Image 1 (tube, helix red, strand yellow):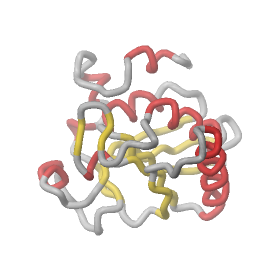
Image 2 (cartoon, rainbow, N blue to C red):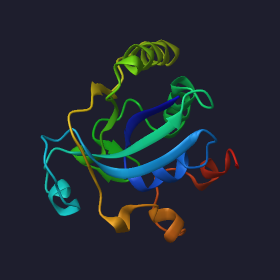
Image 3 (cartoon, rainbow, N blue to C red):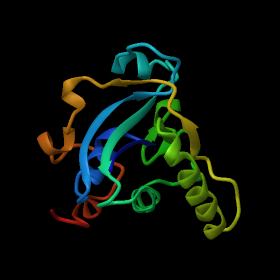
Image 4 (cartoon, helix red, strand yellow):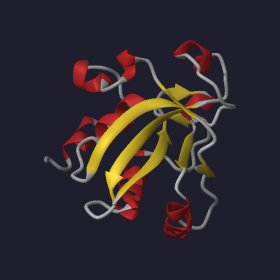
Length: 165
């Protein structure tokens, strides 16, 4: 069954490249989420529009579960870092898990609570919220690291080779 989840995890170039490798992920798209609505540009996001760089992930829940995707997500983010991942700083680089499907809400919240406990019990800096808004990023941001394999990424390159399909 086709589902959609939205992951903010620092610069969206690496997040998109990372999730593109997994069987069951049918489509990814970079964009800007939960910043107050409307279409925005990269320049506006960088000037503190309030949006997070986010990757929209369409997946087949029968081939890869939301729990499996969340496990991968927590492999590539620092869940305690506020508005910063790798060398990128600012509200647009915050971590967040956004959903527009009520059937995913409890599964996401339950997974995040178990992850919090597994990591020692301290509160995580990962937003878990309904999707308020999402607009697609400019074309040059789509599949950026495929087009520019030597481009900057806060996710180690070895993480892009976990699964080949």
